[in-house]
Image (cartoon, rainbow, N blue to C red; front, side, top):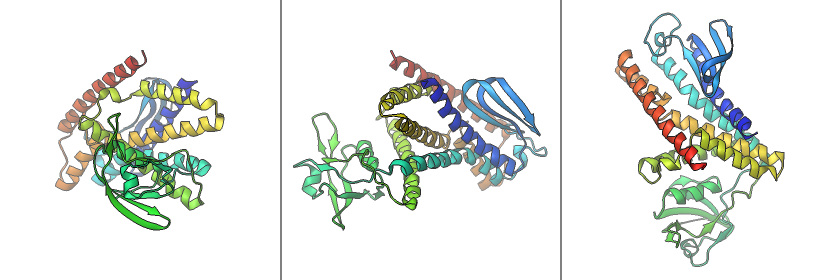
Length: 343
């Protein structure tokens, strides 16, 4: 059952990503040669007009192959024959559609159980937060200038900025208060302010609140992904802390088993939550300015827009090929680590 759920989640996320490329390609009259879910040999396919639609053997990945996409050809209907801004819109559409999917899925969660307001549940006696005057029931509004909308942002901000003094703005009985607070080092090596929040305490608001907090949910996952990448670059986490498809399937399985006791409704909500995390993560990762990714292609296109001159297709293609090979090696390493963690 876990494998089936994982495949459904992966397929949904990938097909929406590729659908973004597909729809904007069609809108800009770019010939789409193939629209595929999966990789490897074709299992099922059919052709409508100029496009072959297919499902392939390996259930990971997908593609929206456009005429002349990597060859720089200028024939009618080719990717290269369109204006630079048309090509930018086609490439950017994939990650953008991932964020749109995250928002739509968030509507189900926030609409069903509400949002986790950043309300303080308890304050440890004698802690830095208590000395600053923060009390249970207060609402955190900002940390170092960053607007706080959900309680998980508080917890993660402290985790991402261990040991740093933070300017915290909170509301107490309708009055705004502010203080610079330095977290205290705990016996377990963590720095904490001494406040507790509970992301399981949910608030249900109006229809407008549901829309707003669904957008905040997407913002939260995008921010979390970016902060996690910063930690990876800075060496605060290593490759062993990363998860690939195998690790994700294992996490889905554990969440599914833990949710079954609470009933089908909570299984559904938790699978939606994992889907939001994964689709937002894929959107951010694809926008990284690395060769072979959408972000890397966008860099070349923006340079072209600034220079008003096309890049050499062969040189650009070589850069993306090298980037693709590097990504494949990284995927193998991450998958090996995932398998190793299972035993």
